[in-house]
Image 1 (cartoon, helix red, strand yellow):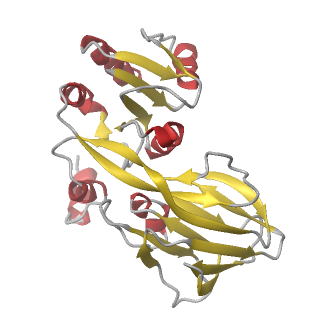
Image 2: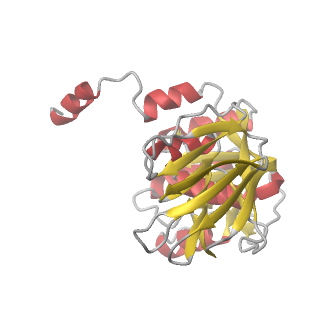
Length: 298
């Protein structure tokens, strides 16, 4: 099996987990390629140079599996690298919460054994595509979590004129607007009180950020709708962010958001379920008073 490994440059205290990952792949007769920046980090910061077939520097790499080593931010960057190739991505969590990178470091050995014998599931996750005449994102104009339109360097709100399939919806007067996939519904959108959408739902959600009108609420729409936005600001510019990759646009800019014509394939262990993640990560069904009591008395 040909495996690519991507990681971030903050792995303090994770050296043993990283070595366990590389050692186990070698024991399973896997062939490894490592993203060039991460390989430099390993060799310079840890003085660790694992046996690999080569480094990944271009946008095309014929692999069977990609492993993201880090948190959800690292997973999003890895998904952007993979792009249209639709190579399955496995997320190993060395970060914090971990909705996308949900394999714990204590599960590395067992998970790799399952993957090498084909005992795993893949979930296809939709992406959003940003279309704008300015083309400042080039070919990397896709988002797995959300496309965010946000104010910049001012306390003044922005006006976001919003059309669905060329029918006027409303003008959001707010600090911003999030257009989120089901995957992104547990990220930024959830922090502004957007609904959680299960990954299998064919929907996206529009979630305003600090709207001027309190009766403006998140709106769930079909994923095949075309969204057209025109943004006006007092200070002359605003931000568009694709999964955290931000670019400044001038006021009066207009752009389209559609569902992308490809997906990201996420590797899941066969016993992993989205509802388990909600209970584990968001403590659904857990009495938080009991959790606090246990922590304070350990």
